Image 1 (cartoon, protein in one colour):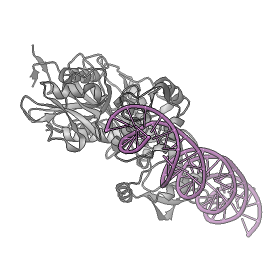
Image 2 (cartoon, rainbow over the protein chains, first blue to last red):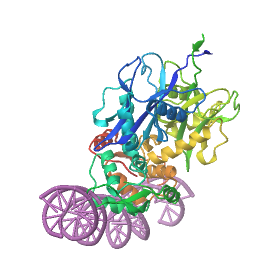
Image 3 (cartoon, rainbow over the protein chains, first blue to last red):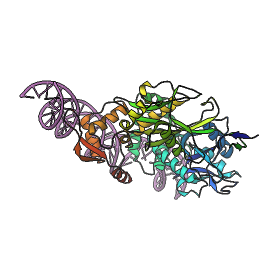
Image 4 (cartoon, rainbow over the protein chains, first blue to last red):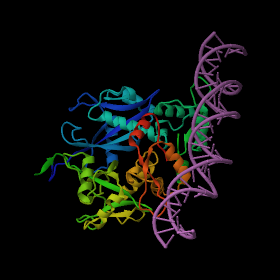
Length: 229
Length: 229
DNA sequence: TTTTCTGAGTGTATGAAGTACACTATTAAA
DNA sequence: TTTAATAGTGTACTTCATACACTCAGAAAA
């Protein structure tokens, strides 16, 4: 069935920059395009917005279809509307970024016969369309936002050690943090719950595990608290 | 001429939240809708994105067409894509916010036979579509952003007094600031140029005029400086 | 069982920045 | 000349950021 309109309409797509926390770097999940244009090039997961789904639903659907990811933390980034960003026709894309616990998903994308893979942000391949620009903006947004909102936890397992938490910030912000100052600050915020549980399977003293208390965070915010790293 | 596509396509629009600095409050420029849906209701200036213009160009064009504003400071806010945000059909809108020097434009919108008027943000009329939500997000964005980027100057005349500058922040942030601390901080940033000129036509001691040094700001940012109020 | 290795966990001193606060000076108008 | 209105200025105190090094615990290897 076809649809006719009085004026020409741009096609509307969504694209997702999926971030995972690698050993020493942030990583981004890319898929290899099968079709023209940019066949064989790496690109962000994404696709057309259906007429009966919201932008966010479209982003979640495409993520699941193309990468198997579900229930990720997703946030709208920016809309890109350069006239010729797609060589075929006018396409406007609403870009999102997602944060996932890489451990849950690394194997899948890597071993799948599929065409999805993780890349360190400092070593991305040439990307299709204007996707390099989108990744760049997503990185900047993430680096800024992680400092004043506790979204970085989305990159970690539910239970984590303070060292893992610190490393997450060090990787994203690309600078080292002082261990004692970091602990003083983060524990002083009173947002972490100290668990009666420690790390397992490590060849050294096991560190205590913590979890993030989201309910408490929202309560504190109402009282004027503002998170800051 | 009509255009036919295989799949149904959403219509794409832009909407602008135009802020001006009122006496004691931020104000927003609204237009009264002539046509259905929401005929006679107040709404944000905006309209359809043409197939051969970028999103930002569309926003600027609509602003000029509907309100006469030109050369405003414009920044993309967010894209809204709820299924039924327009009762006629699926419409996705890319929202922008703009900052203007109200003194330049107040008269025009007010005296024009036109259907545009300024409203204090605390006293907005019922708005068409989801425009109340858009204004709300724009306000939050502006209040957050004004604290870490020197965009507030866009609301003032090129030359301004320190008291006017302080009042601008007080109005946006909705709290009083200490005069001496404010001056110490803002002058300490070394972003203002002290002019050899004072206020005119005031019935009291005339205050010195300053201007914002954008070139210097960009240079400092490169060196790691970060603006903060 | 002892030793070694690896990361866990902890406090203090210093400097920088934020905050609270009140009076005199200048100009125009009455 | 007096009045009214805003301009313009400094200091003391408190809070927060920063720099910095050692002992402890536990597993693995000798």
